[in-house]
Length: 134
Image (cartoon, rainbow, N blue to C red):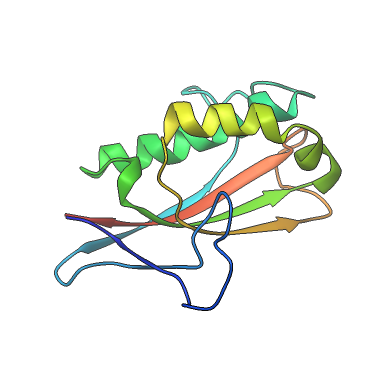
């Protein structure tokens, strides 16, 4: 099963995300709840370390998708919530390395939203996702 990337013909290509993604007929949709930088025992890791929190939250998203029978290539959409967009922008290189390690060169449709705070004290990143599974 392959997702189809949608790119308006006269738009410049985006970097690090897709403008749209279509799932093939018959795909099962998986909604992944917002994942923060918790380990398996729900302890926050990377306290004060934005790249470490991003990596763990993304790894948690991938773990949920794998538990449902999919892989990172089945991710259609991510919504990334951050408490400080400047922290995000300051470490895009490290975030890109974590992305390539966990997701590869697959880029779903994405949104980045700065929020005042997240529910868990010390959490800097939360990632929710939608995946299309075979």
